Image (tube, rainbow, N blue to C red; front, side, top):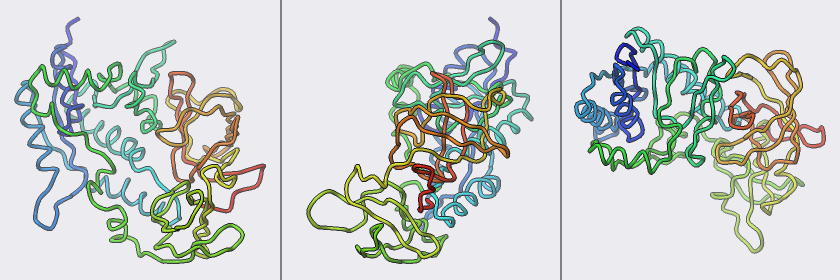
Length: 369
């Protein structure tokens, strides 16, 4: 097959995954262009910017494999669509997932639109996911490497977006990707994977958040009102959190089980399996599907409520206004408002939404995030 007339614009971050993505597509004969997205000004007090270092790596790899490259600044779009959302969710006492919003608004919207202005037939990224045409419809499938599968973060992509995307690494495992980079002599072959939220980087999360939102210390209580200490701010805590509570003593560790935003109270209870950590249903908002909206208003599938979690069987009841009532087959632990609900049918990612309210035995749990 002659791929030379098919233009693929690759989002290159300066990491090994996107480097190998560009390399493989070039090897397959595509007309490849590399684009580095600058989404955040991370210059520190000494004038050092990791984005500059990453772009230098993009230049080195692009020159090695022989493709043109450009840098595009999406800082304004990122601030308006991702960072503002991130802060607004924390103000509401919830725990947002900025990676989901970044993929929806930046990597597969602003970047896709820019790529199309360059004549792109497709865009490609180093995400571990797969795209296949099944029954005349483009489906997004989990990555073969279950430890790296990133469909959780891609759940808001539409059918139109998925039809324009290539994920060359989706059928591979991470060690294979590293090996390809090493054998090709790519400059990023030994580069450490980036972790965490891009705009926080290696900085302390608590310190970073305090620069944008005023912290309001308050009491830390059990659900029956016993004061166990003080918290530094509700925004620093999430449901199921164990570390950083400062509660000593004997016995099982303590966990965050809820928040009272109106009274600035952080609720804690003792024991990993404490009943207050479990819920049996939720309401999700902003429901989006990777294919057409399901024809049945009620259907059974599996779901994830957080990235590293095993799938849970659920029954989904679609509601008006892009909402859904999701009932779990078995009670689930530490389901958290603000996080992503992602639905699956076997290997296929069906889509998802944002967890808004959580319930136990039809009663809404008192915590908000």
